[in-house]
Length: 169
Image 1: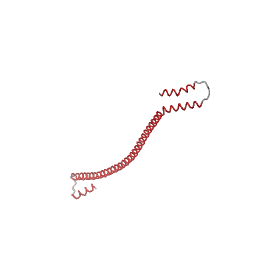
Image 2 (image 1 turned 90 degrees about the vertical axis):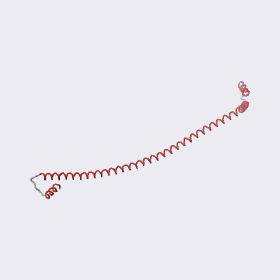
Image 3 (image 1 turned 180 degrees about the vertical axis):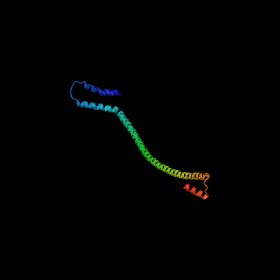
Image 4 (image 1 turned 30 degrees about the vertical axis):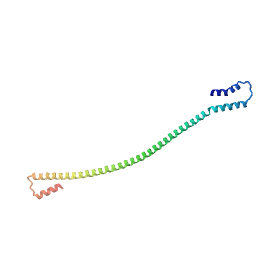
């Protein structure tokens, strides 16, 4: 049916195209064109409308999909920026805590070193006192052995004590 209508519409055009007259028949051609356009419109209008409506809906759906993707991307970027700022805050807190821990450890180590030095000094002084008293005993013992072993010396106890005191001092 459509083919027949198209043939009917195109037949006058073929006849006019093959005419040998070179007259300008603009009115007839315009009238034929309007009829041809009307027939095409009548046959194809619904299909063209459906095509353009579906194409518009497809484009709108793609646009909505792109907008949704864009919104999701923006949300992800915002979330990533928030996580980044939270990470920066956490990092600064960790650094501050580490500095406080370092200061605390330095103070503890310093206190321990000061205590150890004081303890070592006290031990050294006590060791010196013990060594001095040992040496005094050795000197006293050697002096007494000398005096007691010598036969030609007759000393009284007071003289012996005076000699020991002089030797020790």
